[in-house]
Image (cartoon, rainbow, N blue to C red; front, side, top):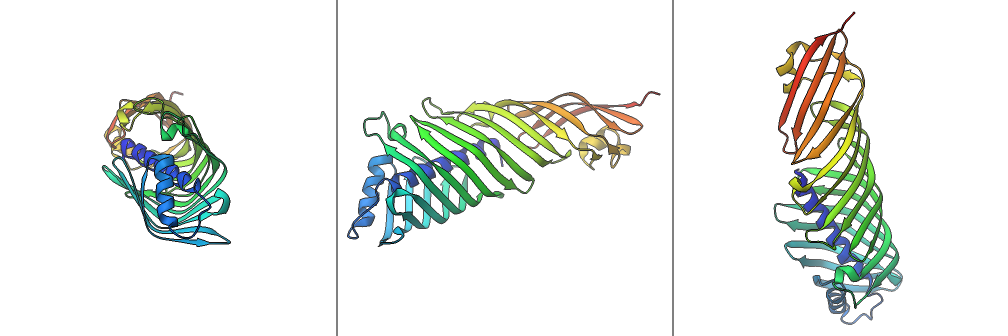
Length: 306
């Protein structure tokens, strides 16, 4: 999955949260015409068009909406069933999908528990007028063939700014955590992220800890920049093309742990010159990896002195 597509997925997820928050604003309802009332209130509070095929009111649980579809610009979403708890305290979605240009995001087991929810009709835009705070959890979220599970975060919005704190998730490569901030007061929107992956696999290198502080704007990967470190754990050099190109004899050689500084810019991850201790040999490396998977690494093998 490219960085551009990942950021579009993040925007799609934010649109979903805005739509859900708008739904919570309109509770409670009388049973007659509840679906029409919800659609009207969401459009008024968020500007998002909502279509509801069936709606029901449960006295103990709240409003149940079925076959829900919504649109916001180029984003289109659908949810078979949404449950709105009474007094705007929470929203549950068993499954939902948002399609956007170039991909789609699918969420399962979404639970949004709100501790604060307000809407200012005098704000410049509906987005700026939305103010909420709550705890979000997802059983899983996937974009194309990439997925994360056990997602939790603390979400808040105010004056067009979104804060995602204490974000935690699990992917096929390991666990990650961090904070993300998005600012929609500029066009395109701007963002900052601080991420930590304490035990993650970097394809073609091995396992280690990744720390990254990044910022950017819009959904294009070329607008992302940041700095970080990859603390590679000791192990064996992989059977990767870059190793074979430098010295085929190094494949499978044991190596020590090393911390590798890197910089993200112009759709590539650039590594500063570093050394890997491979027993009798020292492997000196520098170069870059493309966000598209391309590799441009240059290396030199030196015999250990003494």
